[in-house]
Amino acid sequence: SQELEQSPQSLIVQEGKNLTINCTSSKTLYGLYWYKQKYGEGLIFLMMLQKGGEEKSHEKITAKLDEKKQQSSLHITASQPSHAGIYLCGADNQAGTALIFGKGTTLSVSS
Amino acid sequence: DAGVIQSPRHEVTEMGQEVTLRCKPISGHDYLFWYRQTMMRGLELLIYFNNNVPIDDSGMPEDRFSAKMPNASFSTLKIQPSEPRDSAVYFCASNTRDRGLQAEAFFGQGTRLTVV
Image (cartoon, rainbow over all chains, first blue to last red; front, side, top):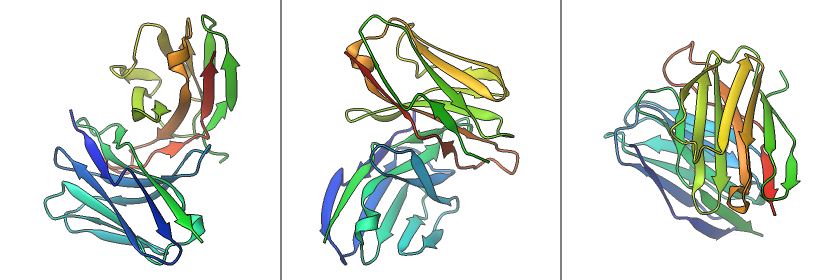
C-alpha cells in the first residue's frame, strides 16, 4: 500500500522567515494534495498537483511536485502567525477513489 | 452550500457505551469518507462510500466499528461498545470525481470523541 512520509514532523520558525515542508511517497503520485488544519478544526484544501514538475502558488505558499512524481514540497515565504497549523499532504489511493494522508507537519510561527 | 456537516462536535462517553457519529455530505457529492485522526497514527481512512455503497472498509479497526449510508445526504459511524483507545477526532469528507480522476475532498469540522 502507498505510504506518505512528511518531514519535518514539526518546526518552529520566527515570523518573516521562509520554510519548506516535504512529502515523500513510496509510489508514483497521480494526484498530490496539500491541506492545512488549525487546531480543533477541519482540513482546508490548499492546492492539488498532478503533473511532474508542476508548481502552484497561493498567496505566499508554493507547492511543487518533482519530475519523478514521488516527492512534493510546500514552501512558505515570509511566514506569518496566520500560517501556523498542521500541514498535511494527501495522495490518491491505488484505485484513485480516496485520499490517504501523511501524518502532518505542525508549524508554529513566533512573533 | 453549507459544507460537510458533522454532529456532534464533541462527545464524551463511558467505556462500553454505544456512540453514533453523524455526517451530512455536500449535496451532489457521490463519495463519502470517514477518517480518524490521532497524534500517534495521523489521519487514517476508515471506510468510504460511492453512491451510498461501501467500497472499502479495510481501514475499520475492529468489528466494533460500523458505518452506514442509508441515503445520499446522511451517513453514520457507530462504535459499539466504545473503548478508551477509540478516543480521537473523527472526520467525514465528501467529493465527486465527475470532472476527472483527481479531486480534492471537502472535510467537516470533525467530532472529538473522548471515551472515559
